Image 1: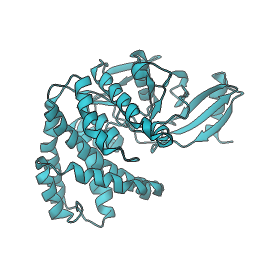
Image 2: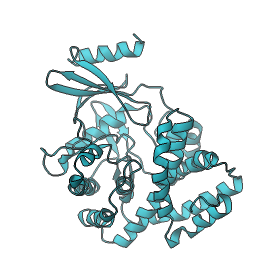
Image 3: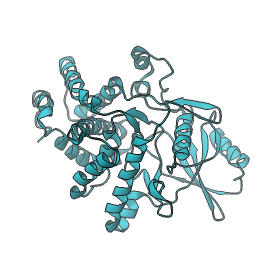
Image 4: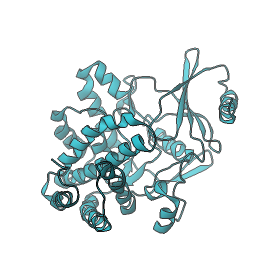
Length: 360
């Protein structure tokens, strides 16, 4: 038995679940591990977020230079190895009536949390089993997003003495994520991106990102999609949507999570749902300028899909997870579609110069 396994077992025992059957199950693209605990009719989820498994998060008061020195997690404002981020965000969501997992026990210093188990009713599976449920489930999730946007969340959050500051999705973080496209996806295509090309890339994105000032920022969970949502029909209102994987949440333009949801990397959302759901969100979030919202939606879609293309190549090549390549054609199609508008002509020109044929 490894030292970490012994630590997990001791934590489970101290939490009163020592007699539970423990089964591992697939996690996400991070270094975290997950286990389902079964004790008779009772179930729970163990999250193992071992410290030191990832680069550090951004410390309080860090400058851009400090973030660069610390690495990608700090630059992109990811929580990395800080389980307090999940605990604090979960607590604040639950307080406001949203279905984030309740924390049954926690040892944040050890990176171990025992969580409420939402079961197996993942959105993607529920819809695969019964396609007629796609419309009501998507409408419920969009309503939930609108309610999150309309809710007030503090920047400084706490849980049982632990604190976490939710930051803004600043230009540094947004640009850093687009660099994954250059560093991984473009290289995978055989391109050599020059310093000049990078300077132009950054200038184009800085101009595009100015549209994000069109609406007040709100909390984005940052990985909102059909495999991170659970359908809980026995609950009321927005609590019917179970939320996970939100530890990297930041304050940003309200289009971010919506485009994450509707331009899903892992499943095709029915095309006739997209426009009505965008309009539904604007109405329920009480946003007056839908045209400006849609501009920001397109920019954040392009930014996010550029990032994901890079991440999926990185997961395949660096992390030994080749299955992520299966999602690349869908994400690429989203990205090409994002760049159709007139505002994206400079970016289309950049591709014509430095990565010709990529958008065809």
